[in-house]
Length: 257
DNA sequence: AAAACCTCCAACCGCCAAGCG
DNA sequence: TCGCTTGGCGGTTGGAGGTTT
Image (cartoon, rainbow, N blue to C red; front, side, top):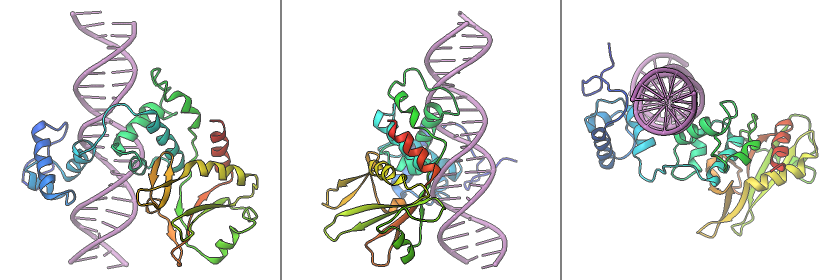
C-alpha cells in the first residue's frame, strides 16, 4: 500500500514538474518557510513534507547559485571539509548561494579522493588535491573553568598528554577580537605551526559595523556558528580542537601549499 | 547510427535530535 | 519519563544526458 498525503492523494515521487514548482513557490511565498507538514496541503501538492522541503531548499529558494564552482569556492570547501568533515550544511552555510546538496555532490564527484581521480578539465582543482586528508578536526564546545584558563597562560604547551588545543577569543573593549591558541599537546613544536595554520584559517576582517570578525577561509564566519561557549564575563570564549597527530598532519599539509 | 559506458545531480531514504503533550 | 511528530542532516541511488567505442 502506497503512502497517502494529507490531501488523501497518493504520494508522488520522482522529478518535479514546472507546475509543482510553481505551486510550491507560491505557497512558500505566501506562508513562508517552515511548517513543512502543512505545505503539501496548502499548496495542493501530492508530495511528502520532506520532498517539498528539499525541493525548496535545493532548487527553488531565491539566490541559489548554479553552474561551476569557482576556485575560491573549491578552496573554501577543501578547507572547511578538512576542519568539519562531511558536515555539508555547515560548509554550505559559508558559501553564499550554494546548498548542502550542491557541496556534497561536488565533493563526491570532484574532490573525494576515495571516489576517483579528478576530472582532467578541473585544472583549478588539481593543485588543491594535496590538501585533502582523511583526518577531521571537529570543534566542540568546552565548558570554561579557571583551570582551563590557566593552561593557556604563559606556558600553554605544557600539559599532560591528551591532545587538544584550546582556542580563546577575547574582546579588548575596543571592538577588537583577539584569538589566542593554547596548545595542550604533547608536541610543543605544534605551537608555532598551529598558530600559523589557524591564523590562516581565521583571518581577521573588519565588518561594516566597524566591529572585527573572522574571515574563515575567505568567507566571514560568526562566533555563533562555531558553537562557542561564552565565559561568564561575556568577553572570553573557548572552543576545543583535538590536536597532536591530527593537527600535525593538517599543519604539514598546510605548509606544503 | 547505436550500443555501451560514464558523469552529474536531483531526489529519496533512513537516521537523529529537539520539541511537545 | 516516554512516545510521537517534525525538521534537518548525510549517505546513497536512479535516471537523464553526454561521451566513447
